[in-house]
Image 1 (cartoon, rainbow, N blue to C red):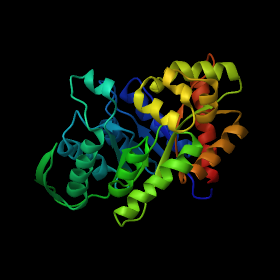
Image 2 (image 1 turned 90 degrees about the vertical axis):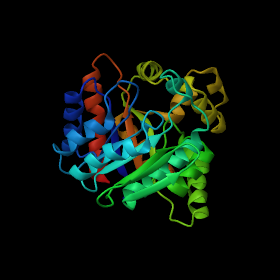
Image 3 (image 1 turned 90 degrees about the horizontal axis):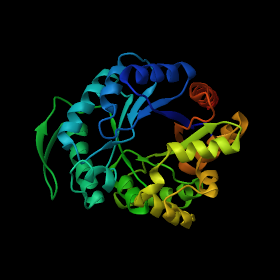
Image 4 (image 1 turned 180 degrees about the horizontal axis):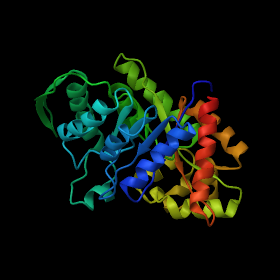
Length: 314
């Protein structure tokens, strides 16, 4: 697709490494850098604030920041810093995360879509109009900022109801591990239905997918099983079952699931798969690099080079 955008997720042990990766992505020509928050690992918004002052063109985003640990006004205050430093380049991606993750932090996890709806309503008001006066079931917020911000607020989505919610309230839906036909047959129709019900244009869908540019099939499968644990979580098992992979309820990757989700193989094969997923998902890819083989840095760099080539080619 001529309009396809290519982004990549940042996986780093410290902030310096994360910044160097983002700068490398910009040099390679990758369109966007994204970062996930998890527990006490690096804070994505903070890293993107630093990256804003050390890059010129690359878009910056979070995919995702869990909502339960932060009040929406706290999230808005943090996001404002990046938006001020990188006008028009920062996209805030949020989501409820998952019950095991949140309960491990001592938080009660219930009605995640209800929480996410109110969270989006607060963020949309304060960031896009400059003020909020909200009293909901889960959140209260009353505040003002000097002016509205040039920033998109996106949300995570895995199943039909979440895509409908994103269609009605967010500036984009961010997936993870969704097979291409599922994006085409479930995600996009639900996203469009939510937008139509809210009488607004449908927002974009960002297809977050694992990518491994590597030729050894056995090493790819081993790397996926070692590095991606999400199939142990009920939300992902349910999504995979909806997508035609009932074996996901066992909580482990089958070869069929890997081949249906992970874009792996030679440069030519992965480039073709990227374009295929871009067509299925609406034009934007968020690649999460899976490193395979004994030299992880070489594996990562091989993938980044390809992502840059595909991004430059459009």
